[in-house]
Length: 302
Image (tube, rainbow, N blue to C red; front, side):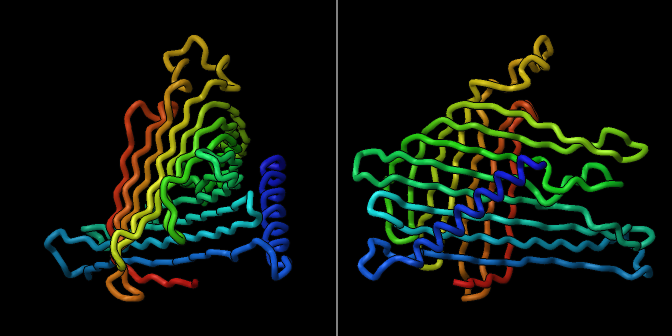
């Protein structure tokens, strides 16, 4: 984890120094100012029954909270910086139909996604870019006796060419194609008796394609989407899986397709539809689909 901490520290220092430099520009600077957005929402549903109910009813409590943030700035005529942050966490509690006792909270949603993209705006058909992305979850709850925090942790450094197909304020459609290097750091319990843990790091390199879309379909309807494709050409642990039935699983294309449609009912109430399709052959030979529909309170800080 020392190596991971180093990456995160370098990233944060870079972001802070960039922001400081941008704020310290002279009035005749090319800086147009920061475009920022930050929204936090909270959704919950709850039902409960007393022990006098005999029809087999069982209560439940579900809650989910999301944070979506974005900051971008044209720091130089030739350099644009954009950062996006997505945090999600939710839990579910269920009531036993017979005893009416409540279970311990079980995690239902867990996501940390922090991406930074530097685009060299050269006014060409395509522009070079560099990017850093951190993906993780708050904790791994597979073992009920010990939580493994921030595991797995995926760090992706990439660079290549990008093309903006549409831009209007904070609306954007952009595709990036380049080469990426990923480090996947996983914590695991190596002794079930003592619950001792160890860390494993796998590194791969390959071709990455990322398409981002943020569109205002109507005044109260917003669509945000991200399609990430990754084809590994190198894998640091290929010799460990050589000769096994899954020896070539790392060569398959990884897919992560996220879609969020947000409809604002009032200034503080919104409906969110979230869908995600994941395919990673090293995790599962089948695609994984997640869908969430929620009505909740939204607080826009800026």
